[in-house]
Length: 312
Image (cartoon, rainbow, N blue to C red; front, side, top):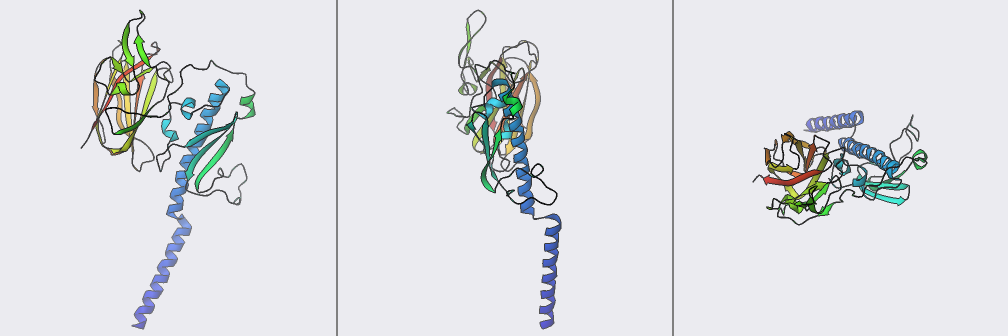
């Protein structure tokens, strides 16, 4: 009996040594996962910094909201683990902070071969902020553009007929109120975001006076709870050219760190109800729907309806 006991004791010790050796060789899986998540966060911060600096170069001020600085990378503002938005705050006319909940601590002594220029940005595990300052060459630049009169819409908590939605965010500034043609005749009413869900065909969800990159517009839809999506329907107007619009959709899963394509480049003309089954039903915590108006001669993008059919 003692021989068996001794055998199992030795076996246990050997297995333990092997496990320790494996951890030393490949690293702690939890630590590795944390470093990967923090790598995504820092990569997003660097892209956000670049967009904020471009905004400052143009307008000589820090943006009030991150949405003002960039419009084609809304998902950059979402934490890969929690899905929550990063926190942005201007602390002076040329200095701001970006905050997140980090998985690892990089506030440690420099490793061999590292210096202050090659080490990762310093942060602690948990809620922490990294400060950024607009570089002198941008502060001293004389390059300026006219400040837009309509700026992107910040996150909205909405009340619509679709009570599963918590908020909808537009990537560009939107018009409100009556829409008139060149003769001054009222042809519709812009009412973001309720117009998307209204049965009134004269009430439109989004009219963009300054679509991003010519004629591009994106909606970020956040659900109160993760939802399964069966199909998506869009209606656009005021572009008589055949297949003037094409739209795409993607969803962010509950534990995902990147989006899942749901609809790819669906072409459609004006006033046509374009319904597409999604390639995956989810569930999704967020939905991104974007439209491109291919003919940039049109200065305004008219997005009438955006409706979601949920799977049971």
